[in-house]
Amino acid sequence: MAPALLLALSLLASDPVTTPAASGAPAPAPAPTAPAPAQPGEPLPAGAPTGDYELAAWCYGAMSEYLDIYEKVKPDLRQIDKLFGSSVKNEAEPYASDMKAAHAELRVLAGAVEAAEKASAEPIAQRGVAAIKLGRSIWIPAEEKTHRELARAWLTWGLPDACDSRARQLEANAKLLGIALTYNNPESQTTTPPADAPPPAPAAAEPPAAPTSAPVAPSQPPPEAAPAADAPTPTSPH
Image (cartoon, rainbow, N blue to C red; front, side, top):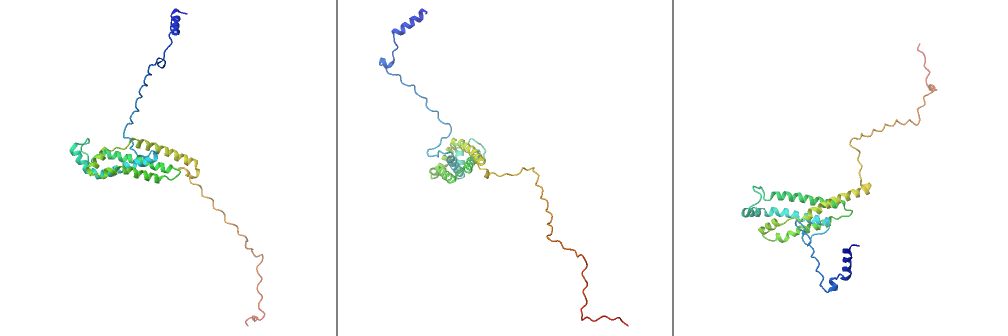
């Protein structure tokens, strides 16, 4: 064995490794853990439903009320834009592009709610109605204030990001569930003939049934009737 290795082994044997616990030194503090990254976009507020179906209905209620409030605060929005300026110039209606996007998002939410209700094996519409009312109710505190304050609340509000992503996932899952339910229940399937299939040939008319008894032809002419006994005998003219 090389001398260097022998020297290293002898040093290890004569000077055992000391640990902090054995030497009385305090243990090092654990490394701090990095905080969880913040979720991007608008977060869900406290009290929002957790189930996908109820959440989609809640988001629909909040967005539909947002669109209804727009008509109330439109004059205030024009005044605010005059005071502070607008990022979009020469708009026929204030925030017209935002309204177009909001209406498109409302259709996404409505489609998810309807798809879930159709695919559910049990009626869930009442739960959806309650969630829609809950979503609309988030605007009550702002609607109780002046129109100008309501307009400011309207300008700062944004639909939570989870509404769109979870609604789209809900609709996709509901469609898959609907296909599975149809596959497992053959009675609910309707079969239609292909468009190019020829129509079925009409059934041949059945021949008329033969009469049960045919009239019998007379084998000989009927005998002439004999003159009556009291009938006068014809005389020949003279």
